[in-house]
Image (cartoon, rainbow, N blue to C red):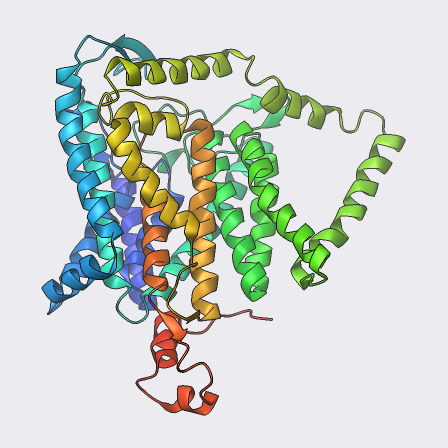
Amino acid sequence: MQVSLVGILICTGLLALVVYMRWSMITALIASLAFGATAIGTITSLGGSSPLIFTVFNMLVIVAALARRGIWREIGTVFVRIGAAWIVCALMIYVSIGALLFPRLFAGQTSAFVTSRTGRGVYEAGLAPVSANISQAGYFVLGGLTFLAACLLLQRSGTLADIRRGFFLWFSLHVFMGILDLLGKVIGAGDILAPIRTANYAMLTQVREAGFWRITGAFSEASSFGGASLAGLAFTYTYWRKTGSKFALGLGAALFVLLLLSTSSTAYVGLAIVTVPVVFFIVKSLASGRLRSGEALLIALLPPLLLSAMAASLFYPHFLDPVLQLVDNTVINKVASASGQERSYWNYKSLQSFFDTGGLGVGLGSSRASSWPIAVLSQLGLFGTAMMTVLLAMLVRGMRGGRGRIDPKIDAIASSVRACALSALVAGSLASGGADPGIVFLIPLAVVLVSRLLPVEDDSVAEAPVRTLRHSPDSSEHVIQSQVGTVPGRA
């Protein structure tokens, strides 16, 4: 294995930060997701696979979860109270066996898209075992173990607050590096973040679209940056809507601007999709006469924006031409482009491989598609897709079905990370080539499932005086306060 010095330095910096601030390791794990093209090294025996730095923190979180007395009792509690733990374990076993067995069982019976070792492109070949079967299965198992570790850690005080800090740190770093990347290109300095992109990926970082620089931040391409920006926008908007946090509002505004400037069709179409439920809830609030201040602010911003656009187009007829050309290239004519046709072909052949294997799938890592649901179906087959659908349904359900009334602070964190995960899946459904939803899906799933078991009060305590809840050291409110801490910026 060839170790990356830059990857080690960034890992050391994140570790030093969490140790100095006395945060838990899961904060560093989530924050490391901002470095989407920084590898810890290159494994030559696995075809040049370059694990990203978040894998280091994955393993540290797992060790931190296990390094405690009474761990077996806590593990038993997780499997008794959280049914998804059994599904994740079954899925890990199935994925690992399928990645090793299916490419050999159906070798040559269908086609697959694999990455070239030399040209860094994707080409079509007959199905056969590849190194990605091992590396992708390893990523998946590591993510599953991280889910179990998160469930264990969330039973301990302070973990929920550390997860919230991790998400805010992630998207703060994401915004910072996005601005650096854009400024470097605008002033003619080029790709100033190139030194931290140590992963063995095809780097599409200095590309223009309709005269606009494509923003890649710390990622390898604009599509990945746009998808992360969309997830961050969903997180910050939900947290702001739940708590009124001014920091979340400012961070969300910066993410929104970077998303618009990213020139990513994934980000634009994804934004249109995730805006639908926002509009629905605003219309619902208007109809019921219970419009919130945050929703009223969004409505108040629309007329000035529309009037500004109309005035610009009136006094400067060609002012919006570059923007219209960008939308035309990235959204309207995207499917008809060479890239769009190629990705559509990947999806078509991936669906065909599902039927060629009798619904069993080609195995994780055997091929790639251009949509997460299609990748799940073609690689994991019917059985794996069914288990993944159950986990997705649990995440979509969210905090509904909790025992008693959920504390508003816990609800704000759980709802925000849930929105982040669902938005990431929307972006993945538009452009992702793999079936692994990653820890962006699994950690929020753990947060939602554990948070549903932490009510602030049940029906028998609902009518009790507030003084009892505040002063009793055994009350559930005391437990909640130790879990989430204080929420800054609450209006």
